[in-house]
Every structure is written in C-alpha cells, then in structure tokens.
Amino acid sequence: MNLLKFIAKRVLIFIPQLFAVLLVTFLLIRLIPGSPAEAMAGSFATDEVVAAIEEKMGLDKSLTTQFVMYVEDLFHGDMGTSWYTSNPVTKDIAQRFPATLELITYSLLLAVIIGVFFGLATSFRPNSIGARLGKGYSLLAGAMPEFWIALLLIFAFYVTWDIAPAPLGRISLSISPPKTITGMYTIDALLTGNMRAFKSAASQLVLPVVTLGLCYSGPIMKMTRTIMSDVVNANYVWYARACGLPTKKVNRYVIRNGLTPVVTFIGVQYGYLFGAATLIEQIFGWGGIGQYAVSAVTNKDYAAIQGFMLVAALFCMIIYLVVDIIYYIIDPRSRA
Amino acid sequence: MADKIAAGTTRKKKNELLSFLRYMLRRPGYTVGLIIVATSIFLIFFGTALAPYPPEMSFSGLERQPPNAAHIFGTDSVGMDVFSRVLAGTKIDVTIALVGTFLSVVIGIPLGLVIGYYKNFISELIARALDLIQSIPVFVLAMVLVAVRGGGIINIIMAIAFVNAPIYARMMRGQTLEQKGKSYVEASRCAGNSDAVIIFKHILPNGLTPIFAQATVNLGMAIMLSAGISFIGAGVKSPTAEWGLMVSMGTNEIILGQWWTSFFPGVAIAITVLGYSLLGDALQHYLDPLERKD
Image 1 (tube, rainbow over the protein chains, first blue to last red):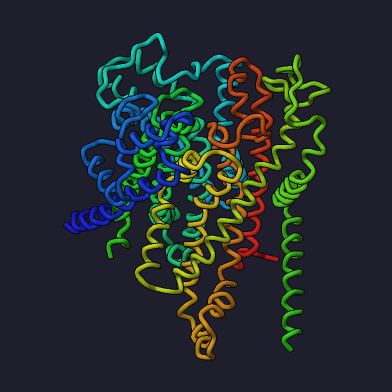
Image 2: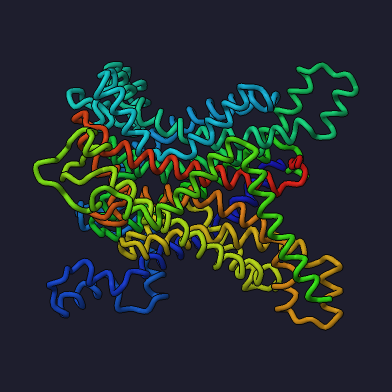
C-alpha cells in the first residue's frame, strides 16, 4: 500500500516536470536568431512568403497563445512536420525510437556488468594491482571519445581482421528485417523465431554496443568503487567485523548498502547514453533517432530538433521516475 | 595589523600552490597529468608556430599519404598535414573548453549564492529550473543549442557555459544553504554587515575550492563535448583545425584502411582529457583532508 502511495506521489511530481520540459523545449526553439520562418523560407524568400509561413506556423500570435497551441498539438500526438523528411515528426520518431532503445539498452547492460563487477572486485582491496588497473581503466575509458573508439573498433574488427560486419545499419542488407512487433530487431526476431535475422541483427549490434559499453563502464566502475570504499569503512561494518561475523556476511551488508546509490547513477548513465547514441548511430548508420537528430541539426529541421529534444528529456524523466521507485523498494531508509 | 594578516594569507596561498605542485610531483600519475596540462597550455599559444606546415594548407597531389618522414602523421583526404593540424587544434579545442568552463563557473557561482541566500518563490523556481536543465543529457542539450544558435566557436563556448553552469550553481547553493545558518554569519550580520559583504566575504570562500576541483574535472568533459559537436558537423567548419572535425573527416578513410587521419586527432583528445582529469583528480584528493597524508 505504501508503495502505491509513493508511486502516486512521485507521478504527481512528474506532471509539473512534464510541463516545465514542454516550456523549455518550446522556448529553446525561440532562441533562433530571427524567425524560424525566415530560416525555413531560405535566404531568397520575399517578405510575403515569410509572413505566409509565419501565419501558417502561428508565429504571428502571442507567445502564450503559441505555447497553448504547441501543448494542444502535442496532446494530439502532433509534433509538427519535418520539412526534410516531409513526414510528421511523431511518425519519424516513433519509427526510429526502438532502434535507439535497443542499442542503448544493450550498451547499458554491458557497461553495468563490466562497471559494477570490476568496481566491486576492486573496492575490497583498494591497494591491490587489480584495483590500480581498474582505476587506470576508468580514467582511460572516461578520456577517450566514444566516436573515436567506434572508428578504432571498425578499423580493427572490420577493416583489418574482417570478423565484424560492415558498419552499415542494424541488419545485413541481404537479410530482410523481422516482422515489426517491438521494433527492436533482436527481440522481434526471437519472437518470430527468425534466427537468421537474429544472428545478423546481433552481429551488427556488437561493435556499437562494445563501444558504448566500454566508454560508459568507466564512470560506473568509478562510482561503484567510490561508494563501496566509503561503505567498507563505515562504523557499522567495523562493528559487524568486531562482533566476529563471517567476512561473507559482512560483505553482503556492504554490497546491499553500497549498491543502492549506484542504481541512481546507472539511471543517469542511461540518459547520457541517449546523447552518446547520436554520435555512434551516425558512425554505424544506425537509423535511430540519434541519427535523425544529427540530420535534423545539419539540415536546420527545427520541428525535428524540437521533437528529438522533447523525447530525450521525456526519456530521462521516465528513467528517473523508475529509478526513484526502484530506490524506494530496495532501500528501506527511503521509506522513513 | 590588517596588512600583516593580508600578507600572511597571500604567503599561505603561495605555499598552498607550491605544496599542491609538490603533492602532484611526488605521484607519477599526477606528474603525467601536470605535464599534459602544461603542454596543452603551451600549445594554445605556440602550437601553430611549431607546426611544420600551415595547418589549413592542402598539398595537391599529396592526399592520403601514410605517415612518412615529411608528414609524420600522414596527410588527410585533401592533402593537409595531420601533424600540423593536431598541434594547431590545441588552440581551438582547449580554448573552447577553458573559456566555456570559466564562463559556466562565473555564471554559476553568483547564481548559486543568490538563490541559496535569499529563500523565496523565485529562488526556489530557479533552483527547480536548474534541476530540470541538468536532467537533460548534456550532449543533447549542447547539440540542440548549437543547432539553434548556429555553429562557430562563440556559440560552442556559450553552449558549454550554459549546460555546465547549473552544476556550479547547485554546488554553490548547497554550500550557501549550509553556511547561512552558522553562527559566524549571524555574528557578521549583528555587526551590521550588509548582505553583499556576508555573501561575498564570508560565504563565497567556503564553496570555492570544491567548485574549482569540479571545474578542472569538467574541463576534460568540455573538450570531449565540443569535439563531439564538431564531429557530427554542428560545430566549427572545415578546414579549421579542430580535433573532433578532423576525426570526422577521416571516417570515410577508415573503411579504406587509412587510419591515420582519424587516429591522431583522437589520440590528442584522449591525452588532453586524461591530463585534465588527472589534474582534477589530484586536486580533489589533495583538498580532501581525510585522504591527504602529506
């Protein structure tokens, strides 16, 4: 019952947050020097053409009216029309979102496995060689740009050794994608039992997922180690040891207490991966919303940029919501 | 008396800097960081002058040369010398990061002080807005800002300042909230000091050091951010010598097996970011009284 109450309360906070995000994305596009209509009409347009576009977009109305219109449209699922793809932005994004979600979810899983495992392993013996190596790894992983690592991996595994598929999209060109259920190829292929498609989709995922996984495991490892080494030296741990509890049992206390803040941090990383995916999708021709955003940025496709920004912000807010709920469940202290 | 105290504090500060340098030089890892940072600062001013060729000059007929004696890092797809461009790129990348981070600190500190010191509806609203901005992935926000405002160095600097300022504003706000209730602040108010004196003379110095350490760590992140923005084609334009753009210019050559165009600028980014991370790490450890042993 308490849990439901907490969820209800947390969702209530979500509503003003949502409103604020809408306001920010709305205002951001107004930062364009001059009017977006001028940008859309091009530099040779006459004043009449610009005025006509302004009227069509509702730019001649007051800022508040425009905002009300924007929110109204959004609740009807309308994020405007991309002038580059000439599709509704909602449709474009809905089509591409699963590709990005699939990529960053596998990447997060890999990053968490590497990061938490080595973070834990090194935090119990802070001066061992392993701990030093772990420290060096997280520093290096944090310093190397993900787009550069992606290129190095392509060079090594595709160009030189030819054991990875070409970085051209989510599935081999000679294999038709599985029937769309979730839009995530690996899952759809498994659901429809299409092993050929699954194998191809999985092998296409390897390099981008390894790139992001390597880069993002660094910060997770560092965070895990920092929190763990605090917990290892906490008074109650010394007390438990002094009472003669077996090391295994003490370690269980330590992990239980130390991993809860790590969960929040992992949630934040999920959001960051969304940003990093733009760079990686560009390199691997992934066709997700990251690549869509990059093409929107280069083509000054403002409706698409606005839509991308909104989806990215919403994605993060939902992640934080879920993380807060998980935190509530696993950490009894947060229930006080 | 007052002069003596002032002299004493400056001497103490000088010693502090010296002892921090000594602290770094005693640890090989941090020494490496120090050397990298010093080199990067040096190259901001002299990188272009040290380059063997003009960084934006293309040698026709010498496109895509692998590393050799004349071009030790090879040449790119339009025949520009990669080594010269990597050296000259320091100026753009590190300057953007330094100025952007500096601006974000300069905006963040007073904002944090004011919204922490004065508790009312507006300050609460600003604090929530900062939380909101921070909840959006940094790269997404910076990319959208640059897309909307247009590429170019000034706009990248502004974007970096904007996405990072909330970090320092929040740190400073937290510090202000903590210090505000302490008795020395009350005493100062009783002595008739104005809010401005209390804020800037008493509360500000308490929050500066952790912010300074955080900013050093963030410098590396800022380099990565601006390189990423130029990599996707939203930042500075070719033929400017900028590391992210150079990596991106080499993406097509990588598939052909010509790795050098993208490889070397990426190494430059990684080494520089590592240097600033090490410096920030050293600063954080040095300032932590529990961990410091000398």
